[in-house]
Image 1: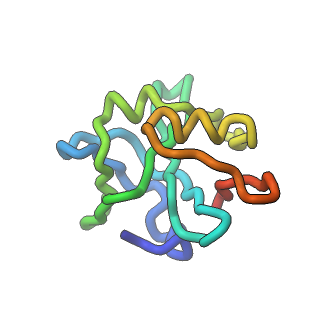
Image 2: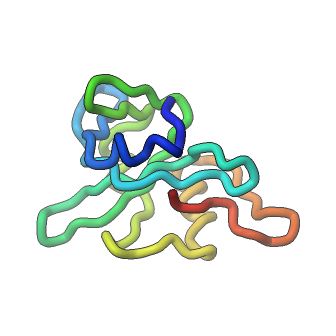
Length: 118
């Protein structure tokens, strides 16, 4: 997997599903705030007049020449919680993103956010 510091190099590249089908383009990386490790990517999906950013976990993701391949199906990613192109993930939306992929969610010990955008 690539490091969050390398996001500028990968932004705009294709994101492929587990079967190699194009889902959309990589927009940004959300890191785990406690470790600063990449945890979710946002992928630009939808029709040109209705673009949105869908979330997909980076666990098990691999990179190839010009693409990022994730371990989830295109359909599951497109049905994932999303935000507007210029939107931000709110604290209230974080649990929904984790739940969609059946991942355990717990805020920080002091109630702080779990994800931060890079």
